[in-house]
Length: 186
Image 1 (spheres, helix red, strand yellow):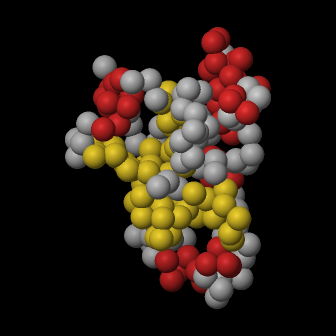
Image 2: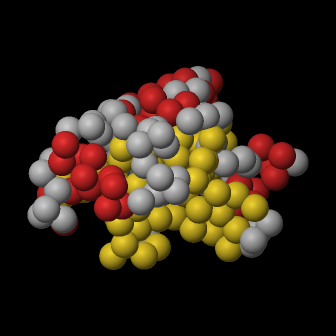
Protein backbone atom coordinates (compact mmCIF):
# COMPACT_ATOMS: atom_id res chain seq x y z
CA UNK A 1 0.00 0.00 0.00
CA UNK A 2 1.37 3.40 -1.02
CA UNK A 3 0.46 5.24 2.18
CA UNK A 4 2.64 2.83 4.18
CA UNK A 5 5.66 4.06 2.20
CA UNK A 6 4.91 7.80 2.28
CA UNK A 7 6.47 9.36 5.36
CA UNK A 8 7.84 12.70 6.46
CA UNK A 9 11.54 12.86 5.63
CA UNK A 10 11.34 10.49 2.66
CA UNK A 11 12.36 11.51 -0.84
CA UNK A 12 10.13 11.60 -3.90
CA UNK A 13 12.11 11.14 -7.10
CA UNK A 14 10.41 12.23 -10.30
CA UNK A 15 9.92 9.33 -12.68
CA UNK A 16 11.94 9.78 -15.87
CA UNK A 17 8.66 9.90 -17.77
CA UNK A 18 7.73 13.30 -16.29
CA UNK A 19 8.87 15.31 -19.29
CA UNK A 20 7.89 18.88 -20.07
CA UNK A 21 6.79 19.72 -16.53
CA UNK A 22 9.10 22.62 -15.65
CA UNK A 23 8.58 22.25 -11.90
CA UNK A 24 8.91 18.52 -11.55
CA UNK A 25 10.99 17.19 -14.44
CA UNK A 26 14.05 15.56 -12.79
CA UNK A 27 13.04 16.79 -9.34
CA UNK A 28 13.90 15.27 -5.99
CA UNK A 29 11.51 16.36 -3.25
CA UNK A 30 12.02 16.11 0.49
CA UNK A 31 8.62 15.29 1.98
CA UNK A 32 8.35 17.73 4.90
CA UNK A 33 4.85 16.80 6.04
CA UNK A 34 2.47 13.99 5.21
CA UNK A 35 -0.92 13.31 6.77
CA UNK A 36 -4.51 12.48 5.81
CA UNK A 37 -5.21 16.12 4.89
CA UNK A 38 -2.36 16.43 2.40
CA UNK A 39 1.36 16.76 1.96
CA UNK A 40 4.09 19.39 1.75
CA UNK A 41 7.55 19.04 0.28
CA UNK A 42 10.49 21.01 -1.03
CA UNK A 43 12.30 20.41 -4.32
CA UNK A 44 15.87 20.13 -3.11
CA UNK A 45 17.76 19.97 -6.40
CA UNK A 46 16.64 23.06 -8.36
CA UNK A 47 18.78 26.06 -7.45
CA UNK A 48 17.66 29.47 -8.66
CA UNK A 49 19.91 32.33 -9.75
CA UNK A 50 19.30 34.19 -6.48
CA UNK A 51 21.11 34.19 -3.16
CA UNK A 52 19.65 34.95 0.23
CA UNK A 53 21.42 38.33 0.09
CA UNK A 54 19.62 39.16 -3.18
CA UNK A 55 16.27 38.66 -1.46
CA UNK A 56 17.13 39.96 2.00
CA UNK A 57 19.97 42.50 1.69
CA UNK A 58 20.62 42.69 5.44
CA UNK A 59 21.80 39.05 5.37
CA UNK A 60 25.51 39.08 4.61
CA UNK A 61 25.71 35.63 3.01
CA UNK A 62 25.45 34.24 -0.50
CA UNK A 63 23.53 31.03 0.23
CA UNK A 64 21.69 29.78 -2.84
CA UNK A 65 17.92 29.95 -3.04
CA UNK A 66 16.14 26.87 -4.41
CA UNK A 67 12.85 26.50 -6.22
CA UNK A 68 10.89 24.69 -3.51
CA UNK A 69 7.87 24.15 -5.75
CA UNK A 70 5.10 25.93 -7.58
CA UNK A 71 3.00 26.86 -4.52
CA UNK A 72 3.43 30.29 -2.85
CA UNK A 73 6.62 31.15 -4.71
CA UNK A 74 6.60 34.61 -3.19
CA UNK A 75 7.27 33.12 0.26
CA UNK A 76 10.66 32.07 1.63
CA UNK A 77 10.98 28.75 3.49
CA UNK A 78 13.97 26.98 4.98
CA UNK A 79 15.09 23.64 6.33
CA UNK A 80 18.11 23.12 8.58
CA UNK A 81 19.94 20.72 10.86
CA UNK A 82 20.63 23.05 13.81
CA UNK A 83 17.52 23.13 16.04
CA UNK A 84 19.70 23.95 19.04
CA UNK A 85 20.46 27.32 17.40
CA UNK A 86 17.13 28.11 15.72
CA UNK A 87 14.21 28.23 18.18
CA UNK A 88 10.70 27.08 17.23
CA UNK A 89 11.85 24.63 14.56
CA UNK A 90 9.63 21.72 13.56
CA UNK A 91 11.33 18.35 13.11
CA UNK A 92 10.72 16.66 9.80
CA UNK A 93 12.82 13.56 10.57
CA UNK A 94 16.41 12.30 10.92
CA UNK A 95 17.70 15.61 12.30
CA UNK A 96 16.13 17.77 9.58
CA UNK A 97 14.04 20.70 10.76
CA UNK A 98 11.66 23.09 9.04
CA UNK A 99 11.53 26.81 9.81
CA UNK A 100 11.97 28.48 13.14
CA UNK A 101 12.63 31.99 14.39
CA UNK A 102 13.78 33.91 11.31
CA UNK A 103 15.23 36.92 13.17
CA UNK A 104 17.52 34.59 15.15
CA UNK A 105 18.42 32.82 11.92
CA UNK A 106 19.41 36.09 10.22
CA UNK A 107 21.61 37.06 13.18
CA UNK A 108 23.30 33.66 13.26
CA UNK A 109 24.00 33.76 9.52
CA UNK A 110 25.52 37.23 9.81
CA UNK A 111 27.71 36.07 12.73
CA UNK A 112 28.96 33.13 10.63
CA UNK A 113 27.39 30.55 12.95
CA UNK A 114 25.37 28.96 10.12
CA UNK A 115 26.90 27.55 6.94
CA UNK A 116 25.56 26.14 3.65
CA UNK A 117 25.80 22.67 5.21
CA UNK A 118 23.32 23.73 7.90
CA UNK A 119 20.52 25.46 6.02
CA UNK A 120 18.75 25.53 2.66
CA UNK A 121 16.33 28.25 1.53
CA UNK A 122 13.40 27.82 -0.87
CA UNK A 123 11.01 30.06 -2.73
CA UNK A 124 7.71 28.21 -2.65
CA UNK A 125 6.88 24.65 -1.80
CA UNK A 126 5.25 21.62 -3.32
CA UNK A 127 1.84 20.76 -1.96
CA UNK A 128 -0.76 18.07 -2.48
CA UNK A 129 -4.30 18.07 -1.13
CA UNK A 130 -5.94 14.99 0.38
CA UNK A 131 -5.25 11.85 -1.74
CA UNK A 132 -3.58 13.83 -4.56
CA UNK A 133 -0.08 12.50 -3.88
CA UNK A 134 -1.40 8.96 -3.56
CA UNK A 135 -3.09 9.36 -6.95
CA UNK A 136 0.17 10.59 -8.49
CA UNK A 137 1.96 7.61 -6.95
CA UNK A 138 -0.57 5.21 -8.50
CA UNK A 139 0.01 6.82 -11.91
CA UNK A 140 3.78 6.25 -11.48
CA UNK A 141 4.81 9.91 -11.33
CA UNK A 142 7.08 9.44 -8.31
CA UNK A 143 9.47 6.91 -6.83
CA UNK A 144 9.59 6.83 -3.02
CA UNK A 145 12.87 6.24 -1.24
CA UNK A 146 14.19 6.70 2.27
CA UNK A 147 16.53 9.64 2.79
CA UNK A 148 19.82 7.82 3.35
CA UNK A 149 21.66 11.15 3.71
CA UNK A 150 19.56 12.09 6.74
CA UNK A 151 20.38 15.68 7.85
CA UNK A 152 23.47 15.85 5.60
CA UNK A 153 21.12 16.19 2.61
CA UNK A 154 21.04 19.93 3.34
CA UNK A 155 24.67 20.37 2.27
CA UNK A 156 24.40 17.92 -0.64
CA UNK A 157 25.15 19.34 -4.06
CA UNK A 158 22.08 19.64 -6.26
CA UNK A 159 23.93 19.51 -9.58
CA UNK A 160 23.54 15.80 -10.34
CA UNK A 161 21.30 14.74 -7.47
CA UNK A 162 18.42 13.41 -9.58
CA UNK A 163 20.85 11.42 -11.75
CA UNK A 164 22.57 9.98 -8.65
CA UNK A 165 19.22 8.89 -7.23
CA UNK A 166 18.19 7.27 -10.52
CA UNK A 167 21.55 5.44 -10.74
CA UNK A 168 21.07 4.10 -7.20
CA UNK A 169 17.72 2.62 -8.25
CA UNK A 170 19.54 0.58 -10.91
CA UNK A 171 17.74 -1.75 -13.29
CA UNK A 172 15.55 -0.11 -15.90
CA UNK A 173 16.32 3.35 -14.49
CA UNK A 174 20.04 3.33 -15.35
CA UNK A 175 19.37 4.05 -19.03
CA UNK A 176 17.52 7.24 -18.04
CA UNK A 177 20.47 8.60 -16.07
CA UNK A 178 22.30 9.68 -19.24
CA UNK A 179 19.27 10.57 -21.34
CA UNK A 180 18.89 14.23 -22.32
CA UNK A 181 16.56 16.25 -20.10
CA UNK A 182 14.18 16.66 -23.01
CA UNK A 183 14.47 13.65 -25.35
CA UNK A 184 12.42 15.50 -27.98
CA UNK A 185 15.37 17.85 -28.49
CA UNK A 186 17.78 14.97 -29.11
